[in-house]
Length: 124
Length: 124
Image (spheres, each protein chain N blue to C red):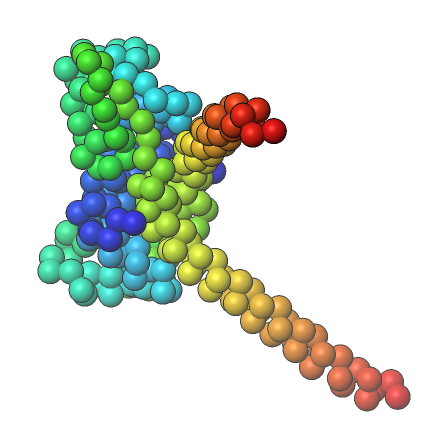
């Protein structure tokens, strides 16, 4: 889990770039070399390397150099940490909205029965 | 759901700042005014307003002006969209790692039984 504020800064910053998200989408299908990651992107190899470095620093990607090839893979633990931060916030909001919905439904029921009561008295 | 690449750019960019995440954490506990959001942050009201504008443009926060007060609340739908993007990637990687684990376990079983076979012949 990423507990450090700076860790989450790096993860969300890494995710904010469409080119880097395209690289992560590619890595979702399996490990790939740096040049494979750069293939669909119209940028220099140096720029691709820079993006990979940002992804690696965030912990979203792990790289391993075997011979002359650096192979990249996705780290599911870091992805889960970012997901966890978002789901915690969302669950809190949804729970509060559910409670508000229940309260409004109860209030509406109450209003309906309060409205019906005199009618029953009028027609015994 | 956020289908547009630019939408996700804006959401992850909004999430990459620790001050803005602090504001989202506060909004997880309920709606708040702009000045309430800025209270724990050591920054000018103008800076707080700028952060709120970034959060609003990303869709993570909705604001409503009643009289002189602008009230902010979290939008769970946008949070869910960002979560969804992350979980799709993570699920793909985890599924592949599970398959790899199963393959390695099967290979290990095979190796063990291949290793046992001659032993049985030697000791009939």
